[in-house]
Amino acid sequence: MKKRVMIKLSGEALAGKAGIGIDPLTVKKVAKEVKEAYDLNLSQIGIIVGGGNIFRGKLAEDMGIERSSADYMGMIGTIVNALALQNSLEAMEVPTRVMTSLNIPEVAEPYIRRKAISHLEKDRIVIFGGGTGNPYFSTDTTSALRAAELGASIVYMAKNGIDGVYDKDPKVDVNSVKYEELTHHDILHKELQVMDSTAAALCRDNNIDIVVFDMNEPGNIKRAIMGENIGTHIKNT
Figure 1 (cartoon, rainbow, N blue to C red):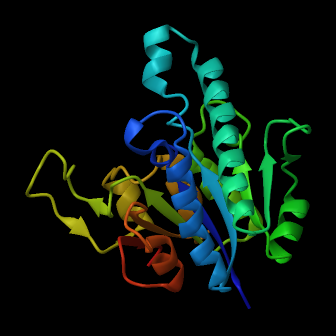
Figure 2: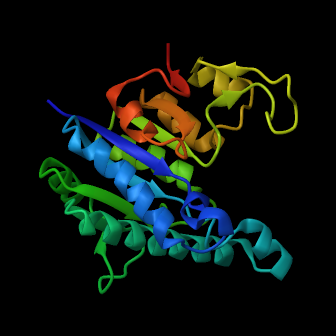
């Protein structure tokens, strides 16, 4: 029986070298990586895409935008990314559906749990846009929430240029140490910046494993789903 998994993709990674917006060649590259994982025929795959390449919190702060409005703008950014990824996957003949927590029926299906499960059981990749549909929640929390709702056993955190979890920021401290394995308790107790605390607590409470790895390394999404020892693996025990 196929396991059900969630892949959290960094929005910034879709921007390529520009760092902002959507780079078509980069999206195509990411779609190819996802297709390789899909072609293994091992998993039912759900994807949550961030929106940092479209709209960042720092920009909202500089513009004096109120937090709730800024969060809704970010949610719309994730939908833009979801549609871009869907089109690249469908160009590769991968059956895909976009479901959104914000009601935009002309653009994508509304998120309905039973419908999402039906798509997954029919071997369609489901891309979830719009976050949770509520401000003050990150796409990390969306990943954990959808995993819990849909019965996924693991969340793959595909990071942009970060190959795992470290005790200190490796970009600042050359003596930082990478963890191979951690528990959910470690993440919360040590306040490691893997995902926000709400997402980490949701994964802990629902016994959902987390694997953190660098999505920029070719073949890593496939390797992660195959269970190879890459990045950092986080579990309850």
